[in-house]
Length: 96
Image 1 (tube, helix red, strand yellow):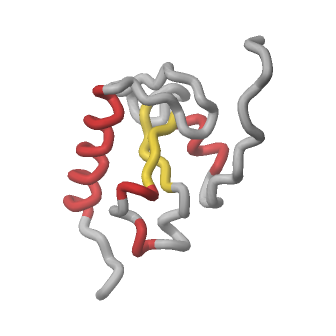
Image 2 (image 1 turned 135 degrees about the vertical axis):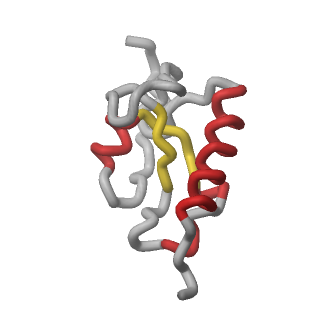
Image 3 (image 1 turned 90 degrees about the vertical axis):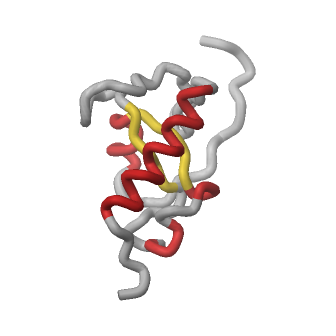
């Protein structure tokens, strides 16, 4: 049964990471906007979701690894789906 993570362990990990990120109002790692609704209803577009840089489906051994976790909006995480995060294109030269 190696590699299987209990629901409780995952819920505790998610709560701990959320607490850390909420304390500093961390932006969504996928779109860069700092407007995550930390306590919003599940599946609402701007509600918090824990995103995994390397997908849990393909990398279950990294599911509870803090360096593989990042804050995201529900909408952004759903758009990413089960894929790994793609590299960003860098910083924009102007604010639009």
